[in-house]
Length: 466
Image 1 (cartoon, rainbow, N blue to C red):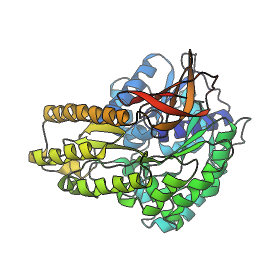
Image 2: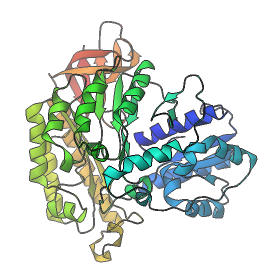
Image 3: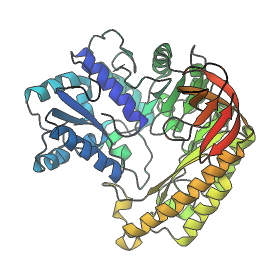
Image 4: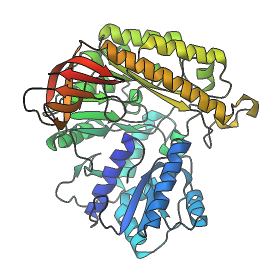
């Protein structure tokens, strides 16, 4: 079971390949199984609670259970103790167990309990200097256990990491890096995901070719911070070089980049993303807020004027470019003036997709230590979330309506019948954005890329005629 983001999806597929290589047989959901492996999320409180609920539900079904993923790594023995107190029999495994996951599940099945790892700050496991990280990473990978690859399993991250597709479909995430070097005051991800490490281009190209050979038409490049790609390889513009190479791979119709830091978006990257055939002009920009004072307290860059200017640069290069972002409301010290700045930005920016999240203290973050008198009551944060979620829906609906009459390319994902197909235009990322219902008078199949004209909108969704 996989919870959380697309990066976790890739981790699950790597775990699946290692299990298959170690003699385990994967079962579909609903089929009898000896062990349930729950790949947890540890991002925000709601995600953490969902992960705990799934572990408990799996254990209550009577099978053996192992918890892996961000929640398991982040809390380790603390999570194991909490589950034990609730009389939940589940083994908690950390990232260091991944290389030997088949043996770890052998232990789980046999009832051989291993002490859960003690959580630590994974940023300290690699040098502070990004330029020094690759040699240590390669030495660590070389030391890992390398199983023989069974049929249908291909190398994913060089010879030491394998991957087995679980979801199928015409889109797939491709992890270009892991970890993060930023120190946003609200975010704990770097502490359990570690320092930023890029994967080398040959690894990415080899995995992308393997995905394309299995029918993938759209590659979604994922990481904690895609605009940092290459900095530890000595080339801050490496993403700009790799994108065209990925787009040239036979069978790949689209390459999409997720999670761009506004402070690191360079003019050259905008140019490549808006002018390279096969690279979609889609900008997933992590703004988080639009008020300068709030962003400073978040340890982030920018304000309403700078963010508006960045979007103008993107749309000057490609007027139809898709732009999405997430925002946190209720951050400590947030005032009515700060909210007004955010509302003005949302009105001006005309974003295609918007996520609104309420602030919550995260263990080990700077913001969690802010003075109590700066923190807002939970009911006030919830009220602000509701208010801005309504604003976001209006903005997204208006932006979709503005696209009526526009020509778009729709990647078909599902045949609905009666000349109707479900797919996504270039400005719509899988799972997180709207979709497009395609009307066509000819047979189409998943993976087809079809030019169409938008004839209707419903919220963030579109209807287009081939």
